[in-house]
Image (cartoon, rainbow, N blue to C red; front, side, top):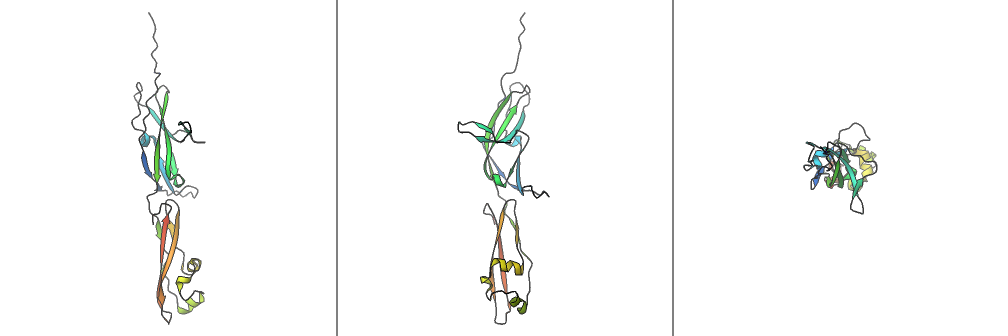
Length: 201
């Protein structure tokens, strides 16, 4: 009689998706240190059907990785494999993600893929309220006769400041048009444009 030991010496098959596009969403965290826009990846979003010959199921973990000059991948400094990767506005563009596949006896295999992170959410613009001023007030503000010649700083200080909100960075610009007659009666309209880094307005 001969005892034969049957073992599983073959690592699991790791299969990653060919590519993935993900959009930054808006975060409503009350913590100001948390990035306003995030995207959360989990292993199931990366996995393309990883399996093992013996284990009925495999465990999946993901992490951020980088490509080395020799064509191999390694974890980014400080990164560990886990159940999610959080991406922020600073990551917009192509991000490399590694998938770690482990079978029931602890054998491991890896695959890697590129994730395209995009910002597709336009910003929101909030204008200050309408304002009525008298001729005397107008002169007291020290405004030029033609408001088109007034600086944005002076317009903001006199008539209020507009603001913008976005899941990533946003800048607000303004234009002004209109006129008053010889008696100082008329109106001006300020138009504010909020633009994010992706060019959405």
